[in-house]
Amino acid sequence: MASKFQAPRGTFDILPEQARGRRRLEAVAATVFARAGYEPIATPVFEDTDLFERGVGKSTDIVRKEMFTFEDKGGRSLTLRPEGTASVCRAYLEHGMQKLAQPVKLHYLGPFFRHERPQAGRYRQFHQLGAECIGTDSPLADAEVIMLLADLLDELGVPGVELRLGSLGSFEARRAYLEDLKAHLHAHEGDLSNDVRERIDVNPLRAFDSDDEGTRGVMANAPTIVEQLEGEDAEHFAEVRALLDAAGVAYVIDPTLVRGLDYYTRTIFSFVCDRLGGQSEIGGGGRYDGLIEQLGGQATPAVGFAAGIERILLALDEEVAGEGRDAFIAVADPDQRQRAMALAAELRHAGISTELDLAGRSFKSQLKHANRIGARRVLILEADGTAQLRDMESGEQRAVDPGNLVDEMTGDEA
Ligand code: HAM
Image (cartoon, helix red, strand yellow):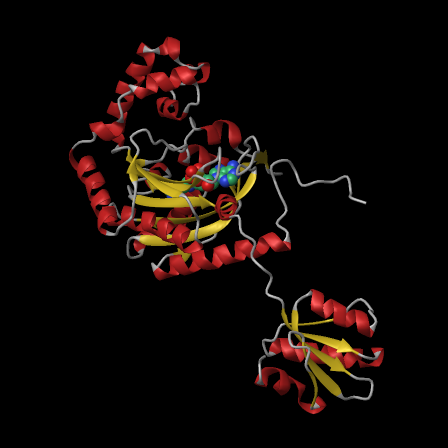
């Protein structure tokens, strides 16, 4: 009978058949990152709440509504990390990585937590993989991280992906633009949804994200920052586009692109997938030249991305077959169990995946079980000390030298 306990709302178990697809994804990601010189980093699953309030931004939905925040026994406010960039920047400063050759290129993977309304592709505990390139404002770095995610999705075979690209300009340009945008929103207040109207002065950019029809009408004529970019901001954006063009990475410019975190400056991007329904963003990121200073460090430009592992897996919608086993050791007589166990250990040490019966099955059931788990060969230990090797595919069986079983198994891999 099932127990009354269930995984908490918005969380899920990763069962063995699902873990296989994840392992493939993780292996491809590790290769893509290593090939470009990105080194792995892992940070704690919880941090001081203040880090995210400062880093992600107090006006964002993430900080206002979605954080799992708790007090520890010493009265400190801690938060389960809703994203990884603030933590990686905290680690960069804490470990003096500004003294290393710049940029510092890092990648990470792990669980993240947001108290959102659960639906397909949106969970309260989910997994991200991400990369951060810290310590350069070169457009080459923007292009490099975008190409990393493009390569990763391509190598995994994710179908129906589109890259959307935008730019927010520098903080100063953005501030001037936001004043124009607020003026536009105030001029059309009557047509806006309540939520957007209430936040005109707090977070006007979110109006571009609204599903409300009246708001969408107002936003269709709103000024966009991409058309207002000037000077170095415009040059930077042009250079990122030229680099992507030269590398053959397809994108569309989306002047209305916004992201749910406050730290972005200049380049922002989003990879969407048409197989995903409502939660169509597979991954995204951008440049965050002010974040490290915001966290108390010296001004240090940086750029990065994160992608949702569950969303990639949903888009792939594939079943990854189990690998089966190289060998199963069947005992014709229970007296042979010790010998079987010792032999299983020897074979495993020699790199041969090996199972044996742990459930007291009859000889016949052991063979059935070997078949069920996809064993390629079965080594049968007879009561008189002799041994037989059966190839499960051809059904062929032959006597083998009982004194030399490991060589027998490693020598002529079927
Ligand atoms: P983000 O857009 O908030 O960016 O999240 C990145 C990705 O995580 C999303 O594109 C989505 O695939 C996945 N994701 C987010 N929330 C959920 C959820 N509730 N359930 C399932 N998947 C989700 C960041 O987190 C930034 N730190 C990215 C970044 C890195 N920017 C610069 N560097």
